[in-house]
Length: 173
Image 1 (cartoon, rainbow, N blue to C red):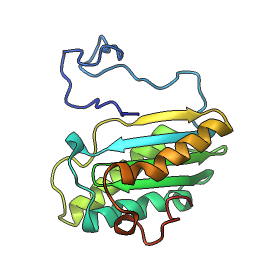
Image 2: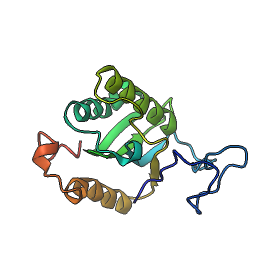
Image 3: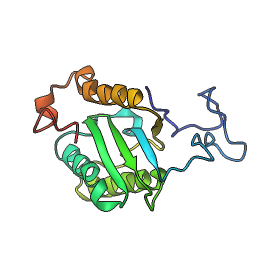
């Protein structure tokens, strides 16, 4: 699954399957209008700005630590699985009557990580692409396949586990 790069688009519809909003230069919101984003299991992919390999060294640690702390910061939200590679993050978030919706939690996560990285002088300019990809996990089979995808993603990126995590089982919390 490749997340849509929704930033940097102007009046051209470079993604024919995502209609442009008539009143703005940005594509229309792809979220389900009648779905309760306070409840459910969600597979999230968020890429760095222009897919640059920004998550290395201390930047990697800051983003990873903030991702792991989401359950402590947001009541009703848990983290099931994650992987972080230099250009993107994949995770499964579980929402159980959370006060904040998935879009709000993810917006805050991206804002906090951007501020932390900027304040540390590690990256200047944009850290994240404007939007993110989300998939509502609907059944156990999908959950198992998505967990497997997240587990194997660093290997597909050509990164060995021991360079990414302290423990090979850390991807699954």
